Length: 231
Image (cartoon, rainbow, N blue to C red; front, side):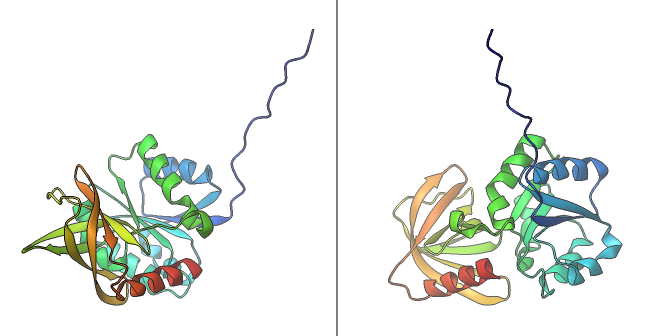
């Protein structure tokens, strides 16, 4: 009788990056630790009163609950020479809460109540950025407020991802494909940028804008993304 070939049990990838979990509940910390570990990212629990660690100690990612005490902690991370470009995750109820902290450049949002499938999906979508595997990751997740002006009307949307060629945005407003627009937004410490583009796709509550290749202002976006990825 032939012996059955049994695959050895899989083990988590060896940790090559660290994510700070700041002032999270035990349940949230345990769940996120398991999710990050699957992609070789070590987690470090940090209480809110130890925010100085975010300024002095190197982390590739940081997860913070969005509440009144979050601003100074995000400021500590973004003004740190080591962590100014770390992947910043917010933990909260909705995107509107994230917009209150848009000047700190939140990259992605874990929604509460925290559920394992959604949390794992978000970590899977962003882990290459945390691990600096840029050749396979050309889109930068970034949540910031975006003004969209086109043909006599203006809406405010929230960015989802950004690339050198365009951006995806979240908004319940109707934006037909083919509509010419001008988008205006801030990128962390970079002065506000305005770029012409066209709506290239539309889904329920989200749409994409492709930057006009003839608008030289889009080169500022490319320069920022290149700097972000190389840091």
